[in-house]
Image (tube, rainbow, N blue to C red; front, side, top):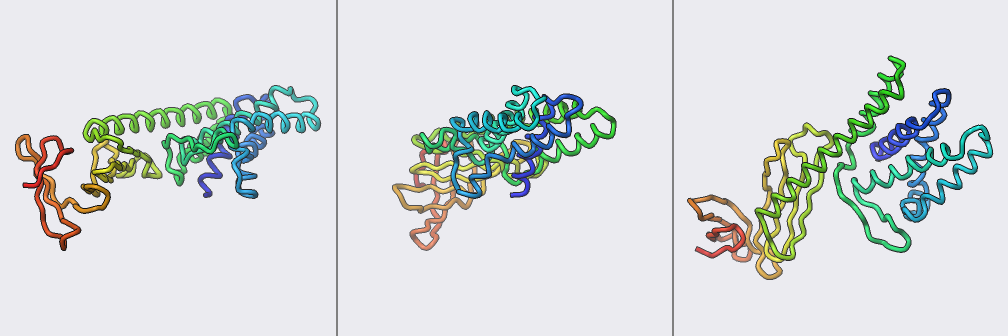
Length: 271
């Protein structure tokens, strides 16, 4: 929870600093941090998704910018509009690459997501905080802020590339019909041993595993599920020439050992 709040606040502040006049940097930084948290206000109070919708957020930003303009009449309205719009859109984007978002609520309750970040990761706000402190010390706050955002963008590009590579490899190795493939971030920090978790669910197979930071897959469970019920749990998987030999426990028959052979890892024939 705390990391979720901090990365929304710091991302909002960093984006606001991009458009801030040199003599108003602190004001923009504070308002940007506040704006980055606005979409969660009604979510936590009323448990709704209105401020997480692309259909509603622009109008909220227009209203908030108008209110601030009444108090700070010397500020350009377009700057105030961007001051709220950029952090709030960033909030929606961060949720999209985290645990998903109802982007077109209330017209649609479809949850859109492309998970690139572990919800508990502090990477985003730590990068912005550390580099911002350096910027203040060397009196290059806006320059260092741009560097922080560039590093975050590179990190997200790396995450996206890794996920695409892993997904393609899973589809290639397990070309199952009507299967659901899931690849989600598993680590708080990029250098941890297990960076991704993957799951594949189909009528015949249930596969679960982790991907290490070297992009090496390590399966933790592999189930063959004929019809509907779970029956075979893999004990040992060996390759002999062009044939795979799979030793399983039969969960319906007192964990009796059963051996299958397969040439493509998809079609299994009992030995």
